[in-house]
Length: 336
Image 1 (cartoon, rainbow, N blue to C red):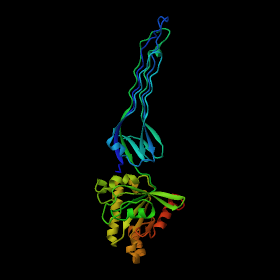
Image 2 (cartoon, rainbow, N blue to C red):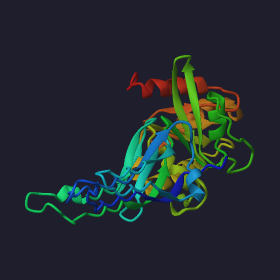
Image 3 (cartoon, rainbow, N blue to C red):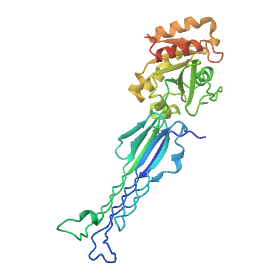
Image 4 (tube, rainbow, N blue to C red):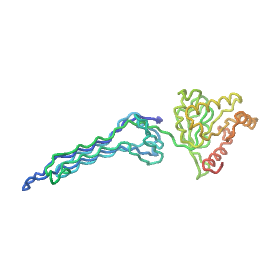
């Protein structure tokens, strides 16, 4: 199924039904009074989050949605039927914006969380409502009001505890395959990851966290170059970022340049994302086994890096369990 993380839709709440103008007409009841009933309220439009879906593809091609109108009132004081509400199902993590004002209307972050997006129109009043001692035969009614109409932009941001970022072919997908049940595509050419992937990392039968992998970033990404920039928003709700670095072939100057490139793109895209806790993960140590400790020391010294740094080999699981456990400890506030 195609992954879709943005969609634009139009929603229209139902109009309220008009009030009725009517008078009693019964045998042996001369001069019957007013008996026009009220109309029904229009249906509202709701958006509801569900764990059963993980993409907005249902809204890519079907973009217009309308709740039911309320029925008009009738004689004999009969009220019109209220219009049925319309509930649209979206994935957990969906942000709803008003396309015209850019106002954020809601963020649905939990299963079954629901938000009213468009208010239905209110009922009109029948002439029975306007009867009084001085006006016993009113001919006044009111019309139902129009339901709200909105142009919405839906943005899906995946919910994950840990996010992976780095250059193409740094080994992000290999890492998430190694420590979770996710099975993203892995190959020896750039941009094998075309869509975000989620994996559940279990450190014990009862302890786990969620990891997100996005397509690799390249220089100029903040200006729209490459694929990764389209999906950086999926890391906005993560608590820790793992910067995966390819250490083979080992060239200190090139590695430092690569790290700085990703940092620069991250900062220019979103200072908030740039300031999230970020760990370095030096990958492919199996190709540099003899110099692994030296490589880590040289890189951290050149960067003046005082945050966590791990050396791993995702392809053969070397160091990945220690990394996963350290992440779980940090996420659960068991380490500083």
